[in-house]
Image 1 (spheres, rainbow, N blue to C red):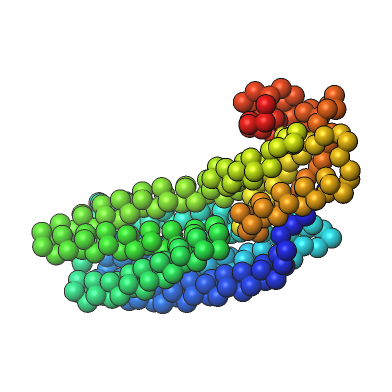
Image 2: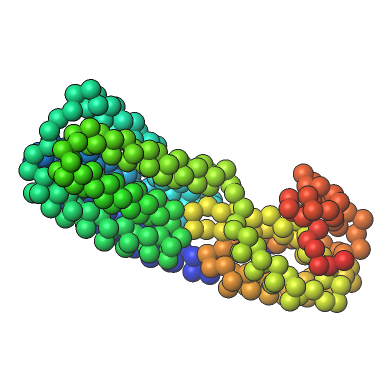
Length: 329
């Protein structure tokens, strides 16, 4: 027996339209900041600002990929993708993570030659003003994307927001370096700042890539959501009712929950069905967008607590993999 959350298709369509609007916002911000940062680089000749503009180019590529993948992720289930298309978001965030790493490598390659051939910076005041304006655009969009990513549980928007926030920190570092060059006249400080920025971007890109790979590997739902499921089980543990073989996975914003319900063998089919409906409804209420699959068994059966592919005992390893769930004796 199994069921999904009511109105999932409608909710998914609404979510998809909302997320693609934010993707378009990210694209517009990237185009704007690229133009501003290239202008600032042209005014100053700063390799730090050039590196900053290159990262914004990556932002644009990532935003376009995000738009495509969010559009795919919003599609309803079909005969070839019966669990939906929500995992497309992980491809987007993974691609953006890889692009961030590539941009960091390009920054390092651009900055290193400047140590042996430092270039004096020009028009620092005008260049700094233009770069600061670009940072303001990125900061505003990053905040909007982060809020939307958390609201809609979208790793794509969260990755985009994280990248933009890295861009803001990058620009702050570059501006600080330019200020030091203007005051001290140390031209070598410009490539040093660019290298530090590149290292920070490497860290951010690695984190995004790790989260994306983890999502594609069918990771289980967060522990706090598992606790909500356990509370729902506890509310129904009476009259010989027990639960086991809990397994969960997440795909983008969607959650998939599977477990077995054990009831006295003399229960009628109707009584068992009503119990399953009640438990499923509670879980869907606690975890919106979840799809719940249940299976009913007689608690006195010889194989009731044995699940193929899972540990047959009731120890911690079995619980973590889907064996007997604590609390029921």
